[in-house]
Length: 114
Length: 114
Image (cartoon, rainbow over all chains, first blue to last red; front, side, top):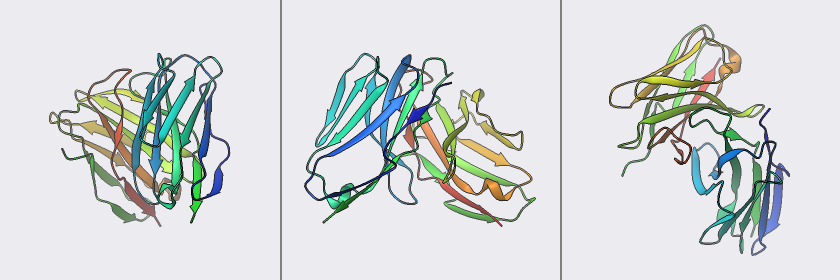
């Protein structure tokens, strides 16, 4: 069974500290992994997409790494700001899943304190 | 370029009624997927459409159905509503059906069943 797990479920850090968010998945046969951000009551905003052949992707203060063999991805957010407070979701497209189906982790709720 | 548009944003229905939700994908996107988000179950895949054909279906009862029109717009319908159907329903579109297309999500429709 293909599953995605995010631990911890919630995280609180002081402003300026680097954030490290973890995602693990049970099947290493994946097409890609996508990180999303969700603000309360809103939809999902795509942050980074890592293809299975890539080891990492970067966008501004965000960097995501992928280790397929160990079934892990990490999202790093440098120099966190209060505006980074949100829920971060990891989603995997497994090869055994048909079409564009994504399997989501439960998310990590982040609070950055000023 | 306009993003994924979902209407309505909020809906309140009573048990036993039926509801139709609408999704307009990003212009040029031909694949549309639907997800249900609840606090207990997280994000769960409902179904996916490409070129007016359902390509993939999640593990939901037959009360949940959908369709896609020739302009790629999609609707989902839930009949005989139950309290447990209260959720945020998210629509996502992607350029093509395939393993490397990132998904772009709308802001969702918040359905409350009383």
